[in-house]
Amino acid sequence: MAVNPAWRVRRRRRVRQLVGSFVTGAAIGALVNIVTALVGDMAWASLAVRAIGGIGLVFGLALVVGLNLGRPLSIRAETPSEAMPPRPFTGLCVVVFAVAVIVVGAITGGLLFG
Image 1 (cartoon, one colour):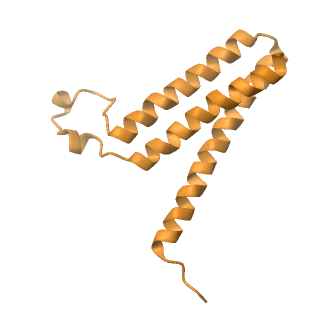
Image 2 (cartoon, rainbow, N blue to C red; image 1 turned 60 degrees about the vertical axis):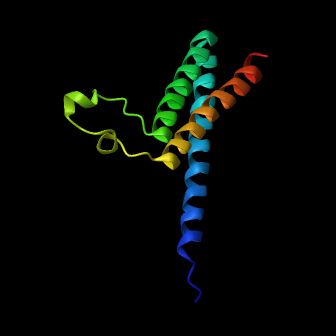
């Protein structure tokens, strides 16, 4: 029985995480438009898709660069490295999620109301 090297296992796990982020974002973007189409007000769907995607982009980019979006460091007496270590791959997953929400939301909105 062959044992997979650790780098291959990590790569497969990261690909699964990226695909999962995209699929989840795509489902949310499409679901918002479909539910809103059934209710009958497209303006709310457009606003919701952009809001969800925008929030995801902000938090994803904050994770990629290691920004601390919580209380100021002086209040907690922490250094930047203690406050939030950079997690670029987690941030990348959140960015992929947000882009999927925006792109799929725009596509389904165009298909439903085009």
